Amino acid sequence: MWQQEEDPCNGWSWIHRLDTVKLLNSLGYLPVVLDNLSNGHRELVKWGEFVHGDITDDDLMKSLFCEHSFEAVMHFAAYAYVDESVSNPAKYYHNNVAGTLQLLKHMVIAGVNKIVFSSTCATYGDSSAEFIDETHPQRPINPYGASKLMAERIIDDFSHAHGIAYAVFRYFNAAGADPEGEVGEWHEPEMHLIPLILDAAAGSREAVYIHGTDYATPDGTCVRDFIHVNDIAQAHLLGLKHVASGKPSDCFNLSNRDGYSVR
Image 1 (cartoon, one colour):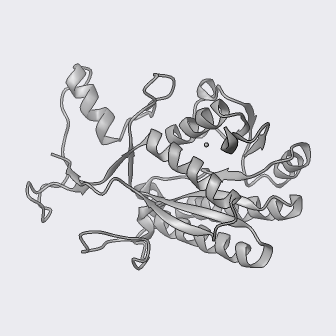
Image 2 (cartoon, rainbow, N blue to C red):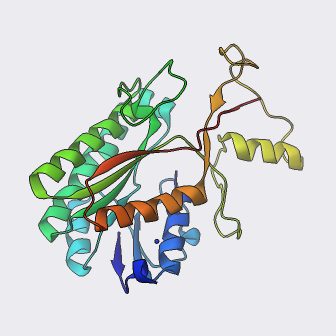
């Protein structure tokens, strides 16, 4: 969430969130970052005001919207581990669905009518299609994907009922770090492919282990569509401009259209 100090249009997993905050701050926005730090790190929130809390906290959300005159909301807050969502679906539906509902409720009360939402390609589920566009059927196969799809539908319903303009982004495989070295991967334990490969190349990890070698792909390993976190940040700036311009609310895939196998 942020306040706008000046109009920069006349002159915009956690890492891409901070990359976006850094970008907005550099363009004259005044970001207000709300994070419960369940997966994040306080020392990396360097741009704008930081509020330690949770979107499911009704009293906190009420005071936050009363204290600030927000122009728009960027909603990144979600749990995003597929395996965990299968073993603990309540955690995902409470945070990803109920949290989104709570946020939208306070947006309506405060008269904030613009939102950019981080969704996921997991809403599409398994598909045999070579390319997936935004009109592809959404049939999620795990609670994580289902929770994000439900959040998309809630946002669309609030758009029709309350005039909230939205841009929904369905990420494919986010990867990379800030080229200036201020924000990067920091997970314990690390589970993402690119940093695991770099750790092995640097000698801090013995090897990279491939899980799954029988896919119907040229080398038998899963093919992924990687998009750099800086490109995701730029997309969110474009999403902000989209909702601010009065264009119809819409959903957009974020990918680079080129697949790379794990091997």
